[in-house]
Image 1: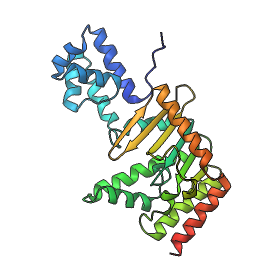
Image 2 (image 1 turned 30 degrees about the vertical axis):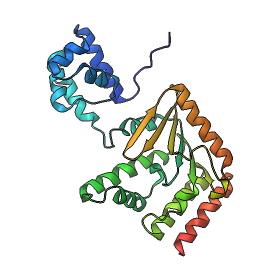
Image 3 (image 1 turned 90 degrees about the vertical axis):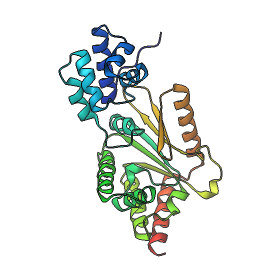
Image 4 (image 1 turned 135 degrees about the vertical axis):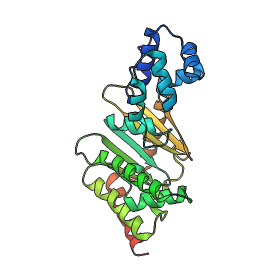
Amino acid sequence: MAEERKPRTQREKYGEEIRLRRVAAGLTQEALGGQVVCSPTLISHYEAGRRLPKPDDARRIDVALNTDGFFARWTEDLESKFPHYFAEVAELEREATEIRQYGAALIPGLLQTRDYARAVYRAYHPNYRTDDLDEFLVNRLQRGQLLTSSSTPIAWTLLDEAALRRRIGGRQTMADQLHKVADMAESGRLRLHVLPFASGAHPLLEGSVYLLKFSDAAPLAYVEGLHSGQLLDSPARVDACHTAYTLALGAAAPSEDSVALVRSIAEEHEHA
């Protein structure tokens, strides 16, 4: 029998605590759902860490399990600053020992400058509110601090040439963004490779992928689309993503040539 995976994220630990308290109280998921006024399926999502109870539901869980406001208070601490489909990834990446990211049309979020991130947000949210934009920028730049440490995680970045040439936020914004990526590569903080247009077809053409490795747990893969994303933990699917990434690396330019190409395109933007 396969060993049961231990909860890693705070959401998973929260869900596991609900399950343990429910079992100790002698309640089934159906019985707890009846007291919380929700379906047993939703209880199972809570216990797996896939969903967080709304404040009213958390208070009803406390009443049903006689936990004196424990889950309601914990829920307040778990509200994520990120979209629901990315919240778990944002938590897990802080525990990763190695990150491999691929940018098909955009520079990945961990590497974005403030001006570049602002331009991306404005394109995605044409009717944005200033407060929402400010919150987005703070959250995105805080994520980027993950790579300010000189030790972990080891970071690989693979960029399609399209991500370098699409002018986002104007020529100076784009130039500054590319110089930042090149600076990080030259400082040794990340391993940078570029897939030039001349390389033709490659295994990552269909979309973006984000690979995470851990010292004490199995690797994960995250794939993202428009306003959606999926965290993959199936060993077969994660292995397939790693294989695709490795094959794409084989089609990419060497690291030194990639840094030189990024610098060159940055200068093209500056002098356009």
